[in-house]
Amino acid sequence: MIRKLAKEVYARIKVSARESWGAPFIMGFILLLMFAAVSLAMGLALLAEVVGVAAYCALVAGVVLQLVWFLKFRKKEGELD
Image (cartoon, rainbow, N blue to C red; front, side, top):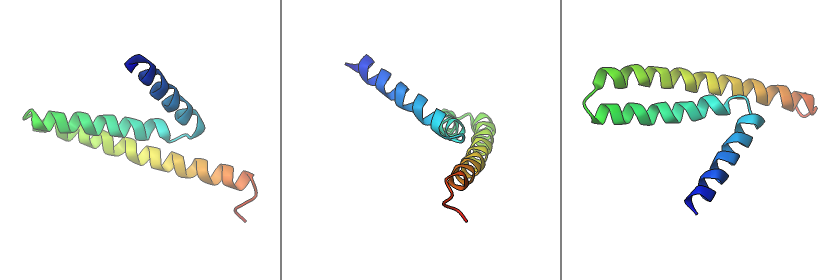
């Protein structure tokens, strides 16, 4: 049952990453931020800071790519004039 759920989640993530350009970066941001939180809880403040900065950069890249994707495909459909 858990394997089936894991396969379904993986399939949804894969589809989401293909549909929008920024999705992989935003997912990476979430993972990096969780890693930074765990590092901070373990007392590794320097590592948490470095990972937090990397997470922020991934978020910025993901949002910019998502905005470009949105404008490109919305323009293509003729909705944005």
